[in-house]
Length: 565
Image 1: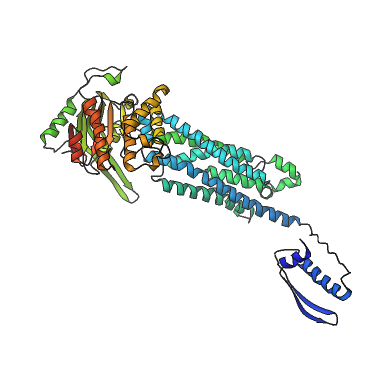
Image 2: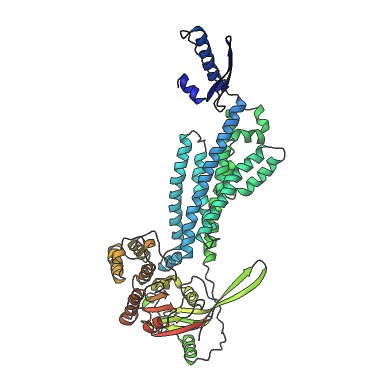
């Protein structure tokens, strides 16, 4: 930069008075630049001298700043470290939000339950998700660590926090996912929780420990409280690494009389407590996750009590008698799909109660299914007709063991499903009320995924999937992302998933919802073909439409308030 450049850069020179070689002038400078006063004064004095004695006289100016004091340097480092910690902590706080949304969505749209019915092992589900989320974390956070190293803010032992934080954070996030019933609220609250406790909490606690006579004890107290969050352990640990001298002076005043700075760093590792916390969190949160999973889907044995009924309809009473008096004829444990019985599915005295609780309210018992009894023969299409809230979907959830009925017994091929459902679930094809599909996968990939879970061999996989796509007239959408399909085509895909591998029992929960008349007629033809022409599968379907029920169903029951009328 030349002298003329400095003049333009540092604003203006003002000549106030010039008389008999007496000059008065003012310099308008940019105060943000420390070299401004010296450079400007030099430039103006040079012009005055050259005016008096000629241009031949040349004056050089040398500027060199005074070295920074140790106090100023420490203050500058502390400010820079705080800014770096804030940015790193914010980035790390955003990572768990991407994990929780997937888990919550799969639980709410029944895709997780559908995977379990299709043959997926619950432990395998969590392990696969765990590995995938860890891979995402190590890559994302690894880029962040690389940037830290690139700008010389990497500290020894940070790699330990990097390795341990991942498993602890994933387990903690999975546990939090059970608290939410909406994907959006799960994402927002997890971000907020990690930001408040991990990002702001770690900074505030370091300030409490560094200032005042009473605040260090308070800071330590909250440090142990907040350490239950893995995000706090990572951020606070990194904060300690960058500002460790401050903590050494506070916690270990006596050591400065005996050890040099380097010896102190080697002998006292402040990360030990955070490392121990993270290791314990990995173990404890993983155990808690499997306990919650087992309790959340705990299928308790229903009661077997006689439920009085005031139903007068002769056909309904006859169905109740038939459901309560049928017994298995032949039972073969080695081939449960070929057991001879009058009925493929039989529901006997089914009742489901939910307990509604509130902080200021008494417990209220809500009866979803009052007293349901019916039988379905092989090759029969049985319809459950009723309005919203009649108990149709709750009936399907009892059959598929999404939750257990309060009372009654469910039989498949004449056998109680309470203890044997793992054997019978492979006989069931289920289309939930809300499509349990992966909207970020293509039509083909969705069908391939569920076919693999059902155990289809690789050599038959492509043939079976393509046949199902052709059967449901989804050929033109085979490579299309499912999320971009219309509502009718999404329902077609959900039904296609339930029909994979020709299951003996097909449960269709409002299969034609959201379809236009032409697509609805097409769906009816598919269901008619399965139940009446092939007569290999028993179909139970729910519907709001009397027209649909009369067209497709051999028999149907009209449900009102959880029972047939």
